[in-house]
Length: 230
Image (cartoon, rainbow, N blue to C red):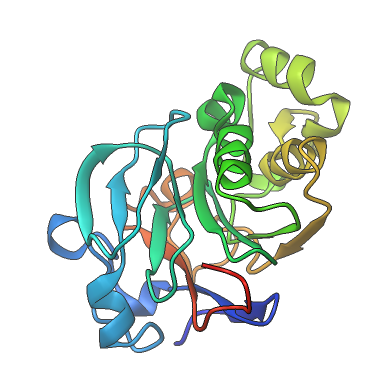
């Protein structure tokens, strides 16, 4: 099964792999030669060692898997695919009319640490202003039970919208709502979805629902340069 994909702001393509395409940590953390990505993109895709923090790195060429602790990648170059891996956490693709693109891996810890804001700040530093975001498959609040004590700092930071009470009366965290709020607070209003709940949809990996150790990937790259862009 080919993963969902879309093209945004004319020259940036975002793609998500699926379970059928296998574990995207394939050897050393690189994306595997999946049918939807294609060999050329898969072999050039840059990944980092994700640690649920807020560090962002900037790359100006295709690096492949990097032994660098970070949770977001930014580039202003054409034909430099960048990606993040997940199995419940939010995977976010970012693009701009100025040609700067980024990816973010945001679980609740990274979200609280400010990884979304840090990535947008770095994109601004490279000249991006008009930014759009796509949130890939992410665990939904219906499947993300949370204790009140763990929810407290998230509600304090992002408001009551991230606190969901499920049908059985238990508390849950709405990670997509938290990501959306973080994006909107730094001026990213064009926020779209690409894929649903990882726990509900068996096409994607989920640690919370199925204890999957494998990871799917969200990859973004620019296919051509805009006039005046890098």
